[in-house]
Each structure stands twice: as structure tokens, then as C-alpha cells.
Amino acid sequence: MDADAYPQELLADEEPKYLRRQKPLEIKRRKFGRKAWSTYLRVAVWVVTGAAASSAAYELAHFLLAAPEMELVHPEQIALKGNHNVTPASVLEIFAADRGKSVLRIPLDERRRQIEALPWIEEATVRRALPNRVEVEITERTPVAFVREANDMALVDAHGVILERPVEGNFHFPVVTGIGADTALEDREKRMQLFSGFAQQIETVHAGALDQVSEVDLADDDDVRATLTGLGGDTAGSQADAPVLVYFGNSDFAGKYQTLVEDIGQWRAKAGPIESVDLRFSREAVVNQDRTVLAQQRPPKPAVARAVKKSN
Image 1: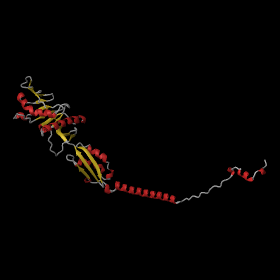
Image 2 (image 1 turned 180 degrees about the horizontal axis):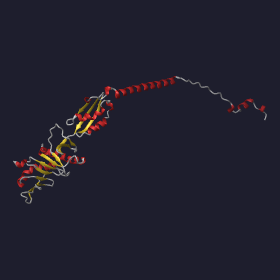
Image 3 (image 1 turned 180 degrees about the vertical axis):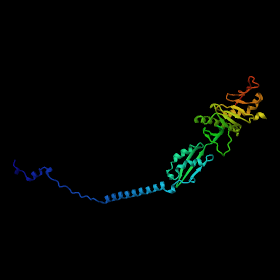
Image 4 (image 1 turned 45 degrees about the horizontal axis):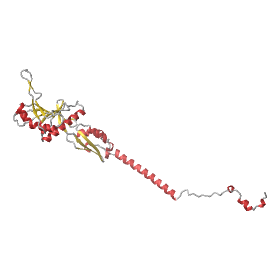
């Protein structure tokens, strides 16, 4: 083929373009532009601020945890509220291990649990009062009866917790028997709940009715056996003041007590002196079922009378 037969322009256009070298574009970059300086400045400010805050926090923590102004030194720095039968000394003793320490180092939850472990205390709140005080607010248990403990009388609340009788304090309660410190707390609480229901219900019938109850036997958790005095009815004299043992069962204490005070005069007229009344049976009262009279070793002479219970 003759190259001269073609124009040189066409031959030039047919030359492969990929053989041509392209001149690279030169891109100029600024190493420290305006935006970069702004970023570096913000980072520097954050670093300085963080370091200053950390230093200030360290100094503050050191002051709060070690400064003498924050230390618990005197018992007067512990404010106690709500105590009537609990001695302040018994509560302050719990904080003896915190003397000389910052109030921020006192384990409040642990101290609260220790305070609530005291028998007379039902609930406690412990909080700090900066700079160097502690506030303790307690709720005491409410006793509802006496209970015999060894040769002395203790108190017991509605949950069966036995409480030491305070030196000062005037209490007027019935004596409960059938429970003691050797009785499981769960059983004591169950029986004292039964007693509390009995006391509340008879008080609804007659205000001051519990004053007539001298003793309550809780040995049977299905039967409240109460000894009452002053059940005069229509009878005067020694019979009216004689103690009567009454079997109330475990329910309807108000209705049974009302029947007792209304009908005991009639029962005395039929049965004579009354020592016991059993109200556990439906619609009837059994009088003197356990009465036994012995004279010169003669056979026992039962005296039992029944009276129809008034319908409520």
C-alpha cells in the first residue's frame, strides 16, 4: 500500500489515542488552611478544659473525702427523729465506726439495715446533711399486748416481734400466752394477727371492750381463748366481776362478743356462776363445759348448760 496515496491528516487521526501521554494536572493543597486551624483550636480547647475539670474534680473529691470540715466527730452531728421508746444511745452506737470519717464515706444503706435490726424499730431512713451531719428518722413498732418472757413481762407487736419493755412507759394491754421467743416468728405473726383482728372487732361493738380482757391464749391458732372480767349483764355482785373464759374460735368476733354481753345475764340465771362459755358452735353457746367440782375426792360433778344464741 502506498502511503503517499492518503492524506497525512487522515493518517494522523488514525493514530491510537491511548499512545498519547496525558500531562498530569498539578493540584496544590494547603497544609494549614482556615478549617484545619479551627479544628486544631477546638481540640486544644477541649484538652485544656478537660485537664482543668479533672484537676478541679480531684481537688473537690479530696476535700469532700478528707477535709476536717466534712468529718463526723461528735454525736451531736447525728440528728435522730421519731424515737419514743428507742434510746438515742442504741442508734448512735451504730455510727461509732464512722467517727473521724467524712460523712460521704458512711455506707448509708448498711447503717439503715443495722438500725432496722433493733427490735423496737420497724423502719428507718438515713440521709446525709452536708457538710458534716447525718439525719436518722425512725418509725417504732407499736406494741399491742404483753407476753411472758422468763420471769418478766415483755411486749409484742401485731407482727409477733417481741419487744423489751422500756424503763419508762405506761402500757395497758392484755397478756397473751401460747407464744414466746421459742415460737417461730412466722407462727407468732399468724397468731398475733388473729389477736389483732379479735381486739379490733370487739372494740367496734363497745369502745373500751379490750379493757375487759385480761388474758388471751393463742396456743391454738384456730381458736382465740380470752379471759374477760366485768361481764355484769343483769347480775350484780361478785359474779359480775368473776373472770370468764370465752372460746371465740377464729372468726365473727364482733357478733360473738355482742351475744356474750347481751345474754350472759340469762345464762347465769339458768346455770349459776359461769366459768367458761364456748361460742365456737353455730347458733348456740355452751356454758361451763369444762367445769368440774371436787369435794373430798368425790366423783367430778359436771355443770353444763346450753343457751340458744340470739340471731344477729
